[in-house]
Image (cartoon, rainbow, N blue to C red; front, side, top):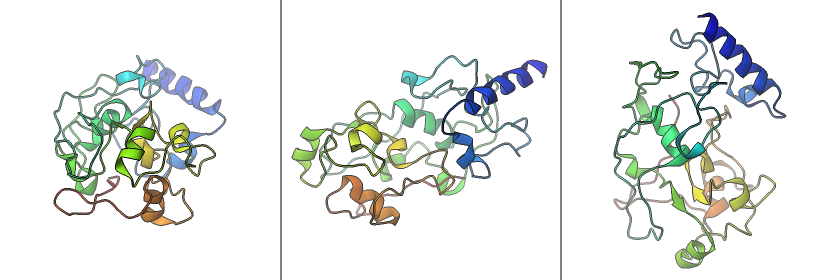
Length: 223
């Protein structure tokens, strides 16, 4: 217990030294697990560890959770022009909770048993949600015809889409979601407002996408 308290204290110090405090928006949100009896009262530790060993593809700092080996059904549509594979990078980290297969309270080397539920649970079939882990570049924008060029189009966050919303040139969960933002974790960054405003940051038409079944793509909610 003493070791856990020391690690938590050091982690808190690290985050206090950051110019933008990520837990300021996290506190009181659905990603604030500090009031769960399995969290030890910690707000950062369920995801981050000051003495962590990195993460999948170094996608998140001081990651404190194991990532599973689940194989997911990936997005498919006749109008989708990018090459896509299994979720990777930061999106795989999100799925370490949101697949509903890996327990939320599995962190720090401890195997838990609490599973996510409701709309936030994607299971191993996130194919009806917006695709992730694909390269979004000028070539894709030109090929698609309904995408802004990410190297020149503004993100609404002070830089281009490529600079502010992509991770290693790829669309990932964090392109649309800010896990430290309590406003439903969505990046409302366009003057259009709401989900359509978010869509129009990248999509020329600005309308919500549909999957191969004609269903509107879902932006997964938090538990």
